[in-house]
Length: 387
Length: 229
Ligand SMILES: Nc1ncnc2c1ncn2[C@@H]1O[C@H](COP(=O)(O)OP(=O)(O)OP(=O)(O)O)[C@@H](O)[C@H]1O
Ligand SMILES: [Mg+2]
Image 1 (cartoon, chains in turn red, purple):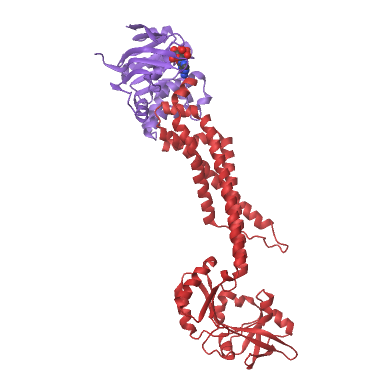
Image 2: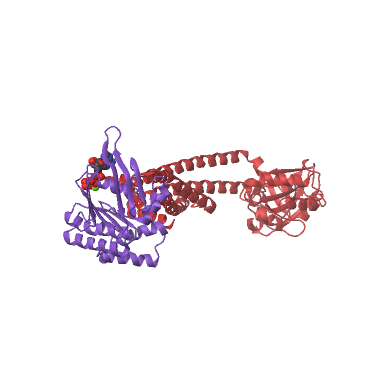
């Protein structure tokens, strides 16, 4: 083993140019794989993140529109127990439509109430407040910055809302938020859970329970588990994947095409290594013949070439990882949107890189198999005879 | 019966299928343990063919080769390889060093084929043998960075490395000057006497042949002369 390895290493060292060429070939293959892989993954991550990163990914609500989840504490316990590892950022929302009236205007809004601390998870609400502060007292609300501009409302102003059932209430505006979605900024009014529950007359009930999951793509399965656990015909569980089918099919199409590219890159790398090593068998047949004449066993002689493939694979993978990361980084750094942010964020998936490198090493070793078999068939007599 | 370390019985070698070249004609020949033998003969008479068959590198078309009292006919490739590594030392007509390795590494190669790693002791022995053939100064040189004679002497040192029972040499001094040739033969003789190694040497050099214990002349694949001193 050791001898085969040493000879393999020496063969590679003695023809540096050739070795460098194969290593470069493998490295380019690996780097293209890593580059395309991380580009696609980065793209998908940022797309998914933009779409559902600060939105609920699973929502539990009453089946009938306008109904409430009455025993919310029990349901929340059941939801959490369905998959404690995946479910995060759970928040109970009490919401309902209302008409907002100022002295000279009125507009339809949605009043949403939740415990500010819980809402921090999905909505990062504390960070979204652009002016003023969260209203923690009874009848204090924050409104969207676009709504404040439309209605010319200032902080510490009092606004009046009317529910569809005709109940009216007055609320103190303590702050403006910016959720970076204009329609939400124009229509949402956020408040603490107590205020919403009292004004909308839901008692202890809430409108819906929202949550996120650690692995966004597992939302479907988690939602199913939640549904099973709740076992309540009056509740419905939805997840973001149902509502974003078009996005998802786009993503899977992307994944499939990147997989195709990677497979072809892999094939060309394997062919390259196999052909260069095949030439190298011819070049080294004299040495192999001598070694066999001195008593080297056939499997060891084959091993010399397998080790060459393996070493080339390792070297190529390392150089390729460096190149690939460099390439991804430059792409993220130099290919930017007009505002200077990267078009596709720099994203390193070590798991993917590990697999890519592992495949390169395995493929290189495998590519050495054909030359290795040829070596074991070489008769030392041919070499001794022909000088 | 004589105590043969190598024996060929009725060995024939025929090359080619359509046009048959008979290189050896039913040869019977035995070499006793510890003897020092020279094989002479014209070019193309079949000397190398015979030596390669004795060395288990080539198979006879007919007949039997017996080494150390065991016929090699039914041995697996693996056993033949071990036999070559442990029992036989080769010096070929052309030197056949590994150009990627230094002189010292080349000498160590037969040892490493058997044992994997070269320990201190084997390194020491390799250096001693290189001393014996007068190459201590170039032991770190790559095989390609040595003169033809130095390469040939390295090949001789390599053949001696595993202290083989039998040394097979095909014109080992073919391209060496007469002084080096003399010192190589003195070395062979010394090893022959001290370790009891059997030598079978093909040579064109009459002077060399005359110093052997026995001279076998091959002519057209047959033994034409067999002188034991
Ligand atoms: N592979 C081969 N195919 C056909 N004929 C061969 C082959 N090898 C050797 N011969 C023939 O066998 C005969 C013996 O060859 P061999 O190499 O044994 O001669 P030799 O005595 O060693 O000659 P030299 O002194 O020139 O080395 C020659 O006639 C040669 O042409
Ligand atoms: Mg010859």
